[in-house]
Image 1 (cartoon, helix red, strand yellow):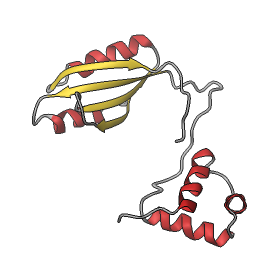
Image 2 (cartoon, rainbow, N blue to C red; image 1 turned 45 degrees about the horizontal axis):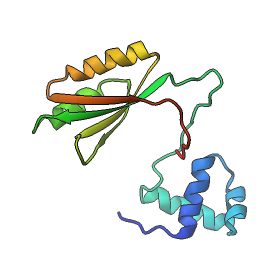
Image 3 (cartoon, rainbow, N blue to C red; image 1 turned 90 degrees about the vertical axis):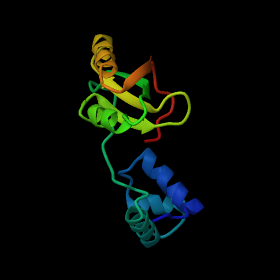
Length: 146
């Protein structure tokens, strides 16, 4: 179901991305609408799949995610499905995107150290169908609206 978002929907989503635990009353106050309106909008956004769920984002104190890296992959023709399945079995692969351009896939990977990232890159390079990779270690996060 394709849903046209209103400006209030976008504002609501932005508030929830900042703090998904914000009380409905506070959301209503910030949006200048009633609590019932917020509840109705939330239900509509959830049913349409715009809001897929709510989660926990870990903070920095003692919960370091380790090393994150972007890995761009070139894939042999007709091997994408197999490569995606192999990458999906690797717990270090946090996200996997199909992309346009020079590469076919981009993975966001996580490991506890640069040595483990290095080993993971070797493992990814050994997957049948992967012809080329290019990686970049993430040094710091400047904006995160998840």
